[in-house]
Image 1 (cartoon, rainbow, N blue to C red):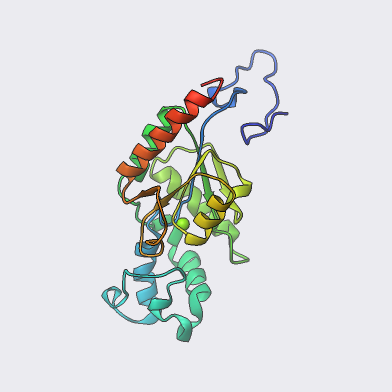
Image 2: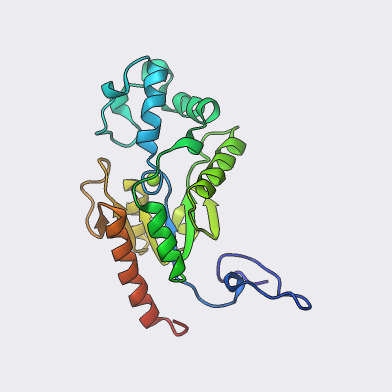
Length: 222
Ligand SMILES: [Mg+2]
């Protein structure tokens, strides 16, 4: 068994040929958060929240902080109740808009032999993991997003990646505190965090290519 690349596999048997993605060699791993980075979670949730609250989507500010407290959800059951309704009754994870350019950038980066590892904390409310996982996989396929690892994890540093992209201030601080290079994908929740930062996927791609170039120079197999 080989665990080095993050995937366990048995050596090929007989005339079975290993796929290029199962070869035992170091690969640059790009750890990619989904919500707020690849999928526009806030924009997808806004119309559902408006329906839940009985208001117009325009009444709900886009200048949100982490937890959506500006939308005043408490009187209607709080954020968790809305989240459950949105995923179970409105297929939220299946219908989120894409952050512009994300899928195309990931396709180009994957083509450079960068391993895309999706790391998301979508399983944080109990009893509807089936819907959350299924909708996530369908959404990724539907948008043609290339990836080899899909990790539903709260502790993102535990997964391992050479470079991360994140929008949650808590996760960014935790990753950086442990020495993991992390790009901030800029939104209203993380404006105070230092570089490296990206306002668009064009900028993300540039930063990843630069970091990948540095890694290749350091890597004996690169
Ligand atoms: Mg996020």
